[in-house]
Amino acid sequence: MIVVTGATGTIGRALIGSLGGEDVVAVVRRPADLGCRYVLGDFDRPETIARVLSPGDRLFLNSSLWPGFTGAHRAVIDLAREAGVAHVVTVSVRGAAPGRPLGGGMHGDVDAHLRASGLPWSVLQPVGFMQNLLAEVRDGHFHGSYGPGPVGYIDARDVAAVAAALLTRPVAEAGGDHVLTGPDARTHEEIAAAISAVLRRPVAYVDLPVPAMAAHLAGQGMPADAAHRLAALMAEVGDGRWATTTTTVEDITGRPPRSLTRFLAEHATAFLP
Ligand SMILES: NC(=O)c1ccc[n+]([C@@H]2O[C@H](COP(=O)([O-])OP(=O)(O)OC[C@H]3O[C@@H](n4cnc5c(N)ncnc54)[C@H](OP(=O)(O)O)[C@@H]3O)[C@@H](O)[C@H]2O)c1
Image (cartoon, rainbow, N blue to C red; front, side, top):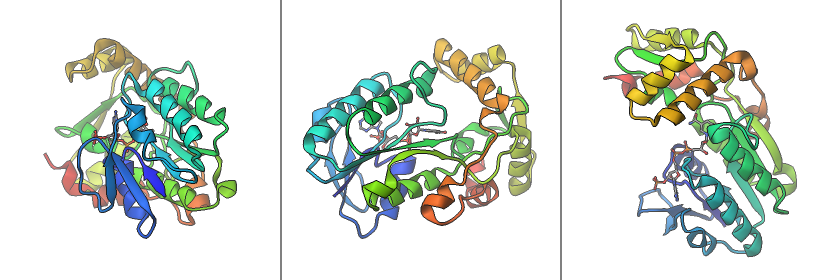
């Protein structure tokens, strides 16, 4: 059986769609129409996820980030080992490592715990998702502190496609760290131009120094400390560390990752005010 956590999320829904024909159970906090069997479970109570697990199961371990993320994911990993799970596939982020700011550090801790667990594991390390743009573009603008550094954004559906491939192949062929990117890296000004071309109206990228970006995020309701760290992280990403792309999506799934142009064309109506 394949047990999918984070099943109602962007990756989870696409993953379940890719696992047709497999024996799949989704772990959800509330009843959800996902096209597969589901059980109720919550990372805040790791035992509610563990009770779903049986020897030989494969576990897709994913949720959004919250303050209890690291402890809860580590607890589920421990319980998965006790249950005799055959393979854990988890979603991390490119460059994750213990001590890194925000999600990079949380994921780094969980990834390290998983690698040391004795369980067969795969850690997916995607860059930023193209889907983020849907929320970020407002009133013909989107803001960041990336400077001129290109980023090879990935369509989250390709993260799901990689997960589906790894969860359905022999563990011996599937383990390890997998850095996932889209097919090409573009500056945020180039991304704005691509969005403008698809929407046929001007969309501008506004690059802000870190303090101004932090104030912008705080103005949207983000706590000041988190806003500053996120803005600083954007500036780091913009230093070129996410400028390279990998062939991992194609290596694992047998087809190239979706391009930004394709993503934008498919989601053009979602950008409308
Ligand atoms: N966005 C990016 O650019 C990006 C880039 C690299 C890596 N990532 C990583 O991708 C992951 C997020 O994946 P996603 O975008 O598919 O997530 P998402 O769309 O935000 O959905 C999050 C999922 O996690 C579930 N969840 C949250 N808290 C939970 C809890 N306490 N117990 C049980 N389920 C819980 C949610 O369930 P409900 O429906 O009940 O809320 C939902 O199914 C994160 O680890 C993030 O760091 C994101």
